Image (cartoon, rainbow, N blue to C red):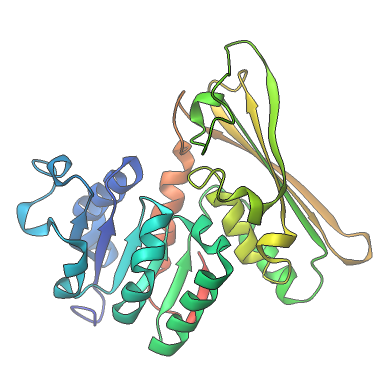
Length: 278
């Protein structure tokens, strides 16, 4: 479906901070990287005017088939994955920027089957996850026994359902908001735990119910997010990593994650009817 042997048409769904970053990079550097922009969709199209060429603005997402893209990138909300994921995979490769949607076991299975049926690849970007490919290799070898991830952020950086964090105050320090399975956590913080969701995809034998996650509010973390990963393998093998991702107050996504997504997009050249962590 590519426009040439070396050029891929990219559709970007969502124009928040991450979507804006990807669109700007494709427009600026895409030609040199073999990428061209096929369309940009956002719930509020007014946000696109003046920033995205008019001919690239897609008003109705259902009309994405008319743009004939090789890769569609979702960077807005898990609901889009639920509503359009199967349709996207029937036409193109699909990079899921909100893999927390995959915590729904039925949707997860349906997307995997669609990728296989249509010979497409369901890409899951590593995002802020460090060592994702190593976790996946350990899992595939049958040696992965346990996986735990803790994400700590300033309370202003969380977007949670309900009123779990509505009463925070400056100077309160550290508060554990949730500790349990990633399957239970994803619906509570769908926009904050995509790193954990990517880890659950990498750790396929454990899956979302078997990977343990913890989110921590910490008012001392005014300049960065912290992601800790503890991997347990066979025969006493273990790895513990701590990643500090610079981030502004109120930012859901740390600054280093933007380039991580860009690098993931460069990998999306087709891997044949499967789920691929990139």
